[in-house]
Each structure stands twice: as structure tokens, then as C-alpha cells.
Image (cartoon, rainbow, N blue to C red):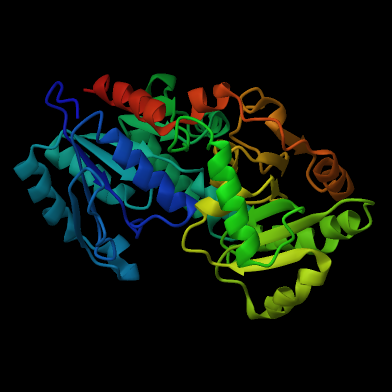
Length: 379
């Protein structure tokens, strides 16, 4: 840990993220873990976060898990005491929901406010048809405009906020989602993982393994599953000499999809929720991402490329991944062109490796260093 300039960060996380399972949880857990190696950091969060050993920074689960926690005014006094006792200089707010609380702490405790945006939340809810997205948009804008520093997950969000929220460029940085390892897995690791996955699901080892992963209770992911079942896979089934299996990983599958377990004769295996997704990323050949809704960067694409999977994605689904960073390892297809998507899957070349440029851009250590430098400059 670098002790410098008397900076001490308090990270405010309003939901369960430890241990990290989903992309958003990993985004906070790994960001905090690596940022704590740059600057002193402690985290205040909800009581559900109990498994914090080994994170590398203190975690205080003092906030209630009740849905009404977002409107609890007494939290101000709890956090004010922690800020004073620990001599906190910077408050790191994950998502804008506790913006009212963070602004009170900024004004009454004299801390610098850093808002860490994982996407433009209002636009994400607009994309899934929530009528109240405009209310959230104005609240989100209000919080970002009063922050001392704003972190956005990719350049598109930063540019949007600069224009629509009327922010100052000097107060905005792109701090992307990252990958925890500085290079691709070894060939031996890939073979071991592949054998493990094939044995677990009785898959012919000669098959090309196509992976899709995501929480299936989330509409954009469920819509993508429908596309795989109804649009992409029928084209793949007609392809001559293509030996493949599509592996679907994810929890919260609606009961209407219970027949998914019987799709193995159509080269689809539903693995459900897997406690450790890493062997699937290491063992697969391709990652398919037919997602066209939702906001922010698709964290599963970053993980897939980091594990050396060839990626086929929609244009919307590839937002936040600069095309020159993964090179030929990622193919981007126009939204809704499912026949072309299937053709790209058939033509994909898994033997190519993820280039070093990807890790130069997406390794968590470099991302945290950039964030730490921005925070040091915000005093």
C-alpha cells in the first residue's frame, strides 16, 4: 500500500458484493482490492457482506440490508463518525443511489466526493422499459454535477455525461472494468479446464465449446438466451461438419424455460449457476454475446477475452471494448443480424490469442493505478 499525501478513502457500497459472483459485484470487489494497494482504503457496506477476509482492506458491514436503507437519514451520523475517527479525505460512492447521503457528508465533513459510475443508470432502466427512468436521470445528473471527481466505465458514458450532464472534463475519467490476471492462461490450464467441463456435462471432447454466461433473471440476458435458442442455434444446426456444444451458465432461469435441460440433442447444455465460472471461461473456445440491451460495459466480455476466448458480439454488447484493443480476437456484428452472427460463429478462429494490448488496457492493476493518480490529483 502506498501511503501518500495523507489520502484516506472510504468506499460506500450499498449492496452485497462479497464474495463476488456477478459482473457488477466483481467490478466493485476487484476495483477496491487493487485500489487499496495504491491508497489507504476502507469500505462501509451492508450487513450481507460478511466474507471479507483476504480483501486487503477493512470492511465494515454496518448498513442494514432492508430496502428502505436508501432513505435512512441516521446513516449520516454513522458515516460521519467513521469519517472523523479514520480521518477520511475522499468518499468513493459506488452508483448514484446514495448520492443524497454522499453530498451531505461532502458538505458537512469536508471530504472530496468521487462517484464511481458503472453505467448511466437511468439509460439502463430506460432500455428495459422503466417509466421512471427520467426521475433517476435528473437525480443522477444532480449527484454527478456536485462530485469532485467522476469515474465512468467507458468513454461513451463519459462523453454522454460531459454533454448531457454538463460536467467539467477535468473532473471526469474513464475507469473501466478489468481483468485480474496480466496474461492469458497457459495451454495446460486450458486443457485441464476443458476436460473438466466436458466430463461434467458429458460433452464430446471433439466439440467446439461455445459459452454464454449471465444472470437469466435479468431481461437483456434472457432476451439473448431467446436469440440463441430461436435464431442462432437453428443456423448452426444446419452447418455441415460443425461439431459444437453451446453451454449456458446462469442463475434465476424462469420456470417457463424448464425444458432447457432437454436441449442437449440440439447441442445446448444448461449448466445453471456454477459456483466457479473460471473453468468454463478457461475451457471454452468461443464466447457468444447476443445482448443488445442494458447499459455499461459487458463484464463477461472482458473476462472472456482475458481467458483467451474468441468473442462474437453484437455491436451494442461490445460497448466499452475499443475495437483495436482485442484485435481479431473479437468479431462485432450489427444488432439483430442473427444470420450473420451465426456465420461469424462458424467462421471464428479460436486458435488466435488475445493480444497484449488487451491486458495493457484492462488489467486491474493498471486501472487502479490510473484511478489512484486521479484521486491524488483531487485534493
